[in-house]
Image 1 (cartoon, helix red, strand yellow):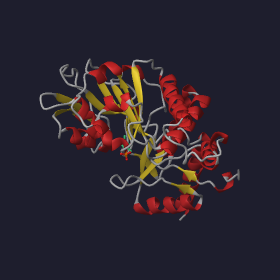
Image 2 (cartoon, helix red, strand yellow; image 1 turned 135 degrees about the horizontal axis):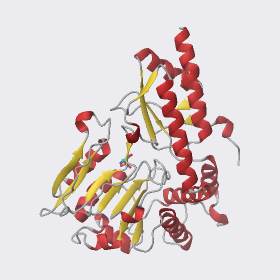
Image 3 (tube, helix red, strand yellow; image 1 turned 45 degrees about the vertical axis):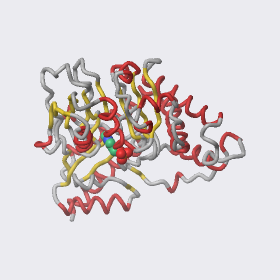
Length: 365
Ligand SMILES: *Cc1c(COP(=O)(O)O)cnc(C)c1O
């Protein structure tokens, strides 16, 4: 394998996001010759024993890393995070029921919008009028008759993150797309959680879904097979041809996550975020968008410059230093630096040094 480390850029994109170089090398090798089969991972049959082994190992690693037992089912699905926004109400809501949604950002809002096509939705809390620059305040009590309560653990575009779950007896469903396996959570408490892979756990093209069996049993059964979780579970993610390569790269990421350990990754993610937010508060040219420290995302750090000159100036300056992917989302503007698991502490320290260097350049202009 050629070593291309020296050409790699410092990538802080929000998704598809950075992957560890060792995972990229393993994936590249498997494209040429998968496990010495004499076939590419792109060529093996999805119902053959080679791929069944990939699926089984990936499922077992998800359960192990999340501390789950056989009460939960693991699925690998297509259609991205957004298909889940539709499948959740199709499977767990109907015209007689109401589902609760916490509106804490763009994706949270889109999830609630999709559900409204299938039944009643109740927005339990929203920070839309604050432009999502903080987490919404949760009510003291949540109607226990709701079919489920949906929330988004990390708000990728605005840069806020829940560190704890809402307290309720209602089954919890969480979109963990942008912080799954970045920190410990009480995964076994969830009725369901899901994550499109391309933020923290793999490449685009596959979405991980984990659903608790007793919750699934209460779901709707009058659905076309492709839209039914129960059918996907029955077929063990092989209802139709799965995205074999995307699942395989996700397995490589799960193995990598286990080698690092979730505890180590969580510590490193805390350290990366603390260093960056501290610099943004110190630096005279930049300020973090999220004022409340307890609401700040450790995965997506959003900030703005004091003026357009500094904004454009730092973008050009950092590009020149081979930094990529720090522009804010098209709807939010400013900057967004994503600090997913694959982004190293060393990369964050380099970015901080560039922020400091640019401040000096700017002040001397
Ligand atoms: C990116 C993202 C999505 C959308 O995922 P797609 O795979 O593009 O459909 C949904 N939710 C969150 C929290 C995200 O970050």
